[in-house]
Length: 318
Figure 1 (cartoon, rainbow, N blue to C red):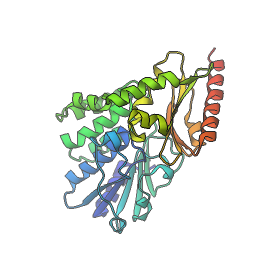
Figure 2 (cartoon, helix red, strand yellow):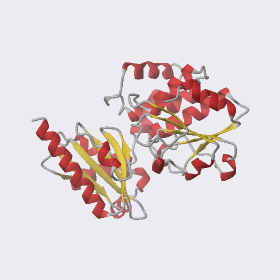
Figure 3 (tube, rainbow, N blue to C red):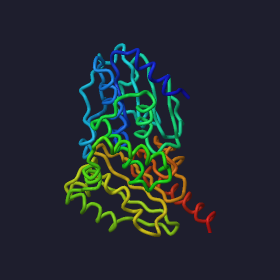
Figure 4 (cartoon, rainbow, N blue to C red):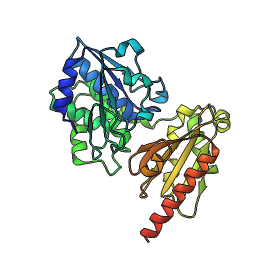
């Protein structure tokens, strides 16, 4: 694995830097991308620093919006991906047109796709890694930089509930807070939902399927979404909903996209689920991962696999 100093030396060499994140972004994807891009713009005002993605920020556009990046922008450019474990999930497929590619991530390094990488699976978030990079290389930490990084850390730690949250995480959060960011505003932006989304959350409880093993699933079809007046990008508020049930220990939320395929969310209170996600063009952390399903048959297969893993976990922990 490369060091922060190695990455910094590469950054010095390029007049144009394009920062990518993963598709269907969460707060950490957008936060780490924006935090890095804004900090480099502060440090190197003479460089062009661009944020690339497929304009799929949805309700998270308050964290960061994408630049209009064209193929010509990659000529002689450095490309950096943040919070993206594998090439299939890189948002904007122009990423491989640059001169050099760097990967900065906190997921298990199952796809070492870059020319240089810094991967720390023990970090709470990619945003925490970017904050560490900023500190190590003496890059300015302004309020504008701290805002998305704090949002990313809060999002990926589940408001500091998940196991990867460490004493160092709180040290970084304290540093970000000192810049003057409005942490209450960030918390509200992450937690607030529209009335239509609130009705969607309630409807998940009504038609959620719960297996005796403790595995659960909810399928959000396009028909259901349209009836409630929400689109696929507004469904992230439902991902944690099944976990509020005491007897549910692992779950899937399947979101049908307009093309008939499904975005798959895996969450768990114990069973390791990232290996399941990897079987379906996805991946992530032990207890929180994402994947894709091409049709309803694959949806059924994914849930059947989750049931088996949950049964084994339940048996091992009797």
